[in-house]
Structure formats: structure tokens, C-alpha cells
Length: 156
Image (tube, rainbow, N blue to C red):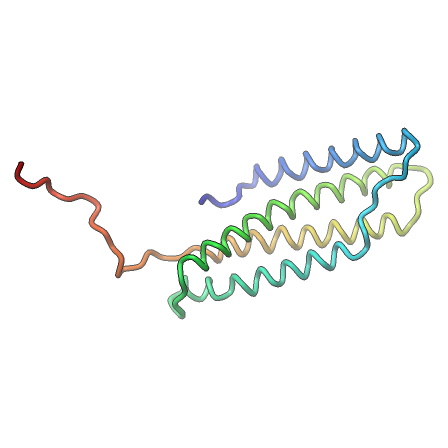
């Protein structure tokens, strides 16, 4: 599995920000209520980022040779880390797009900007934690399970 690239993160951020802007504009122009993330979204994402880092810490210790863990645990934490970085980029982009939309309006409730700012901050923490956990989940190959790469053909 490849690490999450900066281009992927940038595309997700820009795409979800523009998508959120368009959705908010369509809702407001059609007379419907705009979508605002709850104030608890940011702290919930920070909590998930903390759990991810706690799960990735043993993998980091194993990579440094201080501990032994099962490779399945390392790969599952790696998958969670990759998903967290991608979801963090999407939610951060959507929150920043909504924040930009509401900041450009003449009449805005301050709680809306606060909720979207907290959501964006929590999503950015989630994104950074996902990238850090991805970095921690690089394990050296096991010496015990080394398989010869090429073998000489036997007599036919």
C-alpha cells in the first residue's frame, strides 16, 4: 500500500471545499436551510485521531525493534490511518468551503462560523494524525520469514 500523496490530499481538500460551497449556495438560493456541522464534530474527530495514534504507537515501537506485533495488526492500523487521512481531508475541505461561503455572506450567525471553524480544526487534526500514523506503520521485513527470491531450475 502506498502512502497518501500530497496531490491526493490537495485534490480532496479543493474538491470537497468547492462541493460544499456549491451545495450551500444551492440550498440558500432555493430557500432551504443551510447545512451547518454540529459543534461536537471537531472534538469527535480529535478523539478519533487520538485513538488512531494510540493504536499506531505499538506499530511504531515494533518498527524500531522494541516490540513484536502481528503483521495483521500493523496492516489494519495502516488501513485505518489511510482512511483517517482521506476522511480528514474531505471533512476539512467541506468545513472550509462552508466557512468560506458563510464568511462571504452579509448576515451570518457567529455560531455558524464557530461550528465550522471547530469542525475544520478537528478535521485537520484527523488528517495530520492519519498521516503520522501512516508514517509510523512502516515495519521492517522479518528475517525469520525470508524466502529466496530466485531459485536455480532443477534437472528436467
